[in-house]
Amino acid sequence: MPLSYNNTAGVSDSRAELTLTAPRDWTAHGVAVLSLWFRGYPPSVGSFTEGPVGTFTMTGSGADITGTADEFHYAYKSLTGPGTIIARVDSVVNTHNWAKAGVMIRETLDPNSAQAMAFVTPGQGVVFEYRVGAGQSNVGAAGQDAGITAPHWVKLERDVAGFFTASQSTNGSSWTPIGNTLAQNIPMGPTVYIGLALTSHNATQTTEARFSNVTITGNAGTQWSNQDIGILANAA
Image (tube, rainbow, N blue to C red; front, side, top):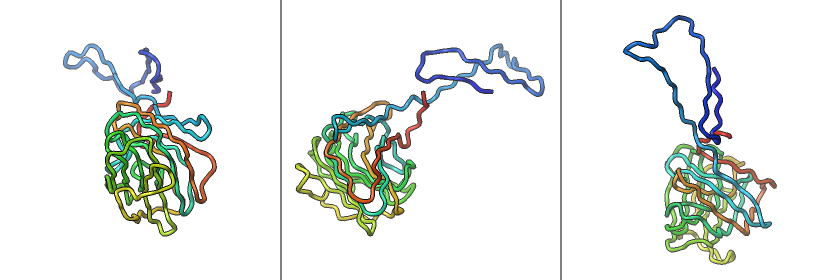
């Protein structure tokens, strides 16, 4: 019994018919009219574009990157083995003090995946967070340097032993571990996803971030892909 819809159009009438195997009394208890209402998910607001060359603009929503599962927009490449990603977060729209724009490595594209992220926020400084296993609680603010806002540089490294280091910089050449944290052992498979991440920390609002000077080292793919992670949406 298909029922068509278009979640980007205005209100419309859509009808479906179902033949019952046996008669039923739909007027019991004084019921005269039966109506069915449903609400779908909104369309995705996530996007990732390049322009000018070397500068990337990303939009996204999502409740947060935290807890046992994440909601955000992700632009990524595959990475096999050790690798590093560096980016200058030029700006991030303040939809919340904890809106997050930065660099990430995650084991899978599942919302509850193991992951590590170094990010810049509008009101909580620059932060290092991670999840050590699928479905486990995120280690929030494992390292944090308050009072820092965009533009600012962040770097995330995975070494050959699976240890992750998050650093921050004012100039892209002199680096300091975020919150002076030590390297963290975060078990992941040999092939992971490395890239840029953005969450609005407010599921009803869309934030925007700009990144520049993005470099990835290691055995990484050449083409960017991007998608929402953990955000339910209807395709238009």
